[in-house]
Image (cartoon, rainbow over all chains, first blue to last red; front, side):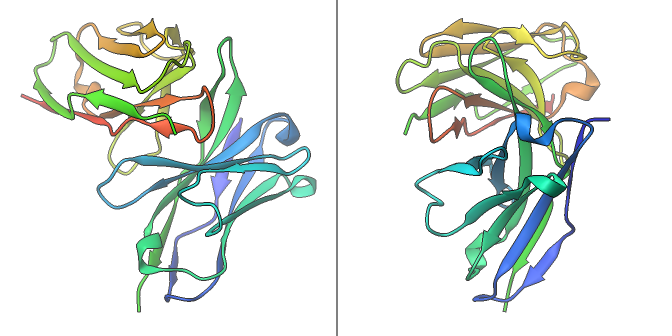
Length: 121
Length: 107
C-alpha cells in the first residue's frame, strides 16, 4: 500500500525547536516530490514548500521562507519539516503530500494523516 | 503569487441537489488545477486533477471543467458523504496556492 505516515502530535513552548517527519512506503520515494501544507485551527490549507527527495532541492512559499526548513533522508524514505524557534502562531495541523506528475502539472495524490503541533507557554 | 478565489465560501444543499463551486485564478494557469475534498479531522483527498480528470476511485458524480482563469467543480447529485469542505489548488507555478475553501453543508 502506498502511504505517507507522519510523526505524532507535539506540544512545545515558544522558542523551542522541533522536527516532524513524513515516511513514505509502498513506492519509490525518490520519484515523487513531497510538499508540506499547513492548516491553522478552523482555517484553510496553505502550501508551505516542497522537496525533491532525489536531490533535496527545495522551493518555499515566501510566507514560510526563513522560518521553516524542509529536508529529506532518502536512505530512510523520510521527509522532514523543522523549526528552530517556534512561535505560538505555529500552532496548526501539518500535512505532507506526495505530488504526482499528471497530464497538466501535478497533483497531491497521497497525503499523510497530519501532525498536530501545539505551541503554548 | 497567484491568488485563487473560490466561491461561494459556503453553501447549504440537500441530498440529490446539483452543486457547483467555482475557482478563479488571478492569472492564467492553463489547466494546472486540482480539486480536493476535506472532511473534519481528516486529510484532504484528491478528487480532480488537470482541471477535469477524475482521480481513480472517485465517484463519477464529481466533475471538473475550465481552463485559463476560471474553473468549476460540479457534484451532479449530492450524496450524504459529500458534505465536506472543498479546495482548489493551482500547480502552475510556485508558490502553489489554494483557494480559501467552500464548505458544503446540509440544508
